[in-house]
Length: 606
Image (cartoon, rainbow, N blue to C red; front, side, top):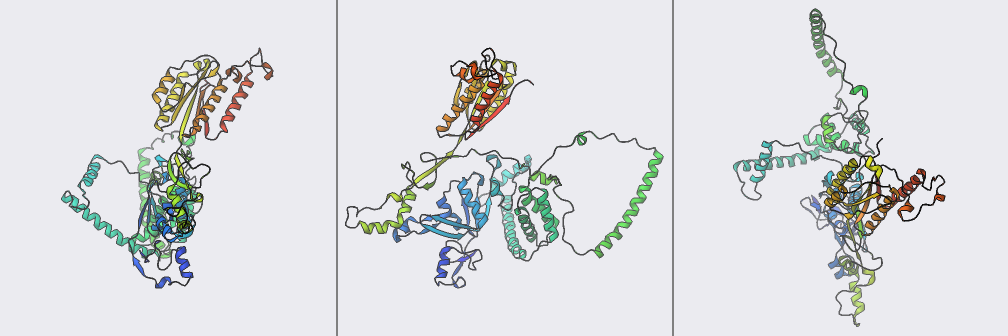
């Protein structure tokens, strides 16, 4: 790419992609015009964003050394400034923290970076080619970020047979970077790959010139818009990006846009943004078809066969005439696929499209989130201290004080602080903002009362075992609270030991009353105590019970039940309505707590 010589922002000599504030201020003050400035040609930058990147490294910050020398804030460009007009590569973009993802979102949307920090106010252009990868199994990518990325490719490959796997291993083992290859076959393969790469570079150069004059027909735009509507795409980015994909595909081949380009555009730009609704089959469709009618006699079959052959011959004779007439009468119209790739019910009809869009766009489970503090975790950004400074951010503190070192040294002449190397004041102090992953705690509240002994206690233990296994695979903490008799007990405090949890669950006795309200309250207190440790962000309470509560909360706390508190009380015992209201009240209190979720598994025999 051609840039203005000495520009840290890769500014185009024609100013096509915008200019930075430093260059704009120089032009406003009568500096040399862009057309007369010296230029140079450099390699298009390839910048990779690491997962642990900090904000000051991404967008830029004050240059500590230059700020100390000059006595004013000097800006040091970050990764985004270097990536302008180049390639910005992000591996595992779904694992970036939220603040970094928001910065990338603004860059992709606006094409510029706005810096307001450490006494620096600056805007510079940033229009890179963003290439990112993510694995949905490790965490979903935020929809509004994915929607702003034009093309989505699926890297799910078909399973290789044994010969293909052997060939892949041989290709890797035979390749030697920077030296002679391991075999003559590897030499030939490398030469072919280099030749193909050079041919592709040449094709891209010609395609960029051909693309300037390539137009997409209104009927083709209408087809892409109808596909976007059928797929349930929100907004207009799907069809806009699809039009660009179709143009690029045709330009790479050096021809006009065809139906193949439109199909490719649907797969790459519309399908990933679609919301598919696969409706179940009707009962009539699920029923087996009726048996075929019995065949007619042989004489009728021969007569019908002769008639069909004559009709087919007549149709074949008429078709060429019709085709000639159509070719003479119809003008040269753009090529549009004959069939839509989505039906009216937003279900993909093309089998290739179904394979490509195997991910259902349903509600996504929330991530584990982060816990922010000033004492533990990964250092993500500096911040102004609130109260006592726990972890000093030395880098940010020095950057904040750097522009004032020159003036502070001058004021210190003749005082006892004259020989100090660095002058730091309270207003310069910055503290570290730390973040760490928030763990999850799964509390199993298991009904061990006498009614559960009759209502599939073994099945309830089996369900708890399966949930325990899933919790172990997710590295969640586990807690076990059985309730029977008059109260609930924490049989297993929060732990990651699934073996201990299984032993306690298998040996858990059954019988007695059902203090369900006390169990919910014990789960609530256990979850709150776990959250106060700072290592647990989300608490999931799994209640396995038949719901037949018969012990009031006051009895569980060692008090006697007061019949006057229950209008429907009989023989000094609480009514079912009183017990039900008590359980519902405890469940409501648990539901409004932040970070708490309640899952109830009904084990009653219906």
